[in-house]
Length: 152
Image (cartoon, rainbow, N blue to C red; front, top):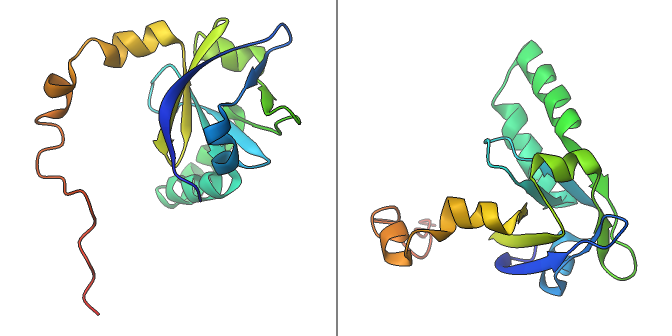
């Protein structure tokens, strides 16, 4: 899977289509799953098919029995699959746009394995008010830049 990272602003057209940033198109692929965030962030999460499979494996392995079935139903209620048109635009349903308070302008944020869609003002409220030193200093303390190598 291609790495998805960076931020870009896009605008919806009059029929709720948003052009995906070109750098995200390859990594997201031909069928994209849109999810209303499950962690109370007011954003939408875009997954490639492979990323969605990985995500649902993690979610479903966190539950057993009837709770697993309930998790599947909740994911079905919070997700939709879209296919970009030839110009790389995706359509987003009104209830999904409302969930994330998306207006005409959208901030697309690549997070390595997924893309989040935010209202730019909401992103600024959640993440833009802290300087990078204040935001990152203690949070990433002790996190290495690479994974430890496995002994063979």
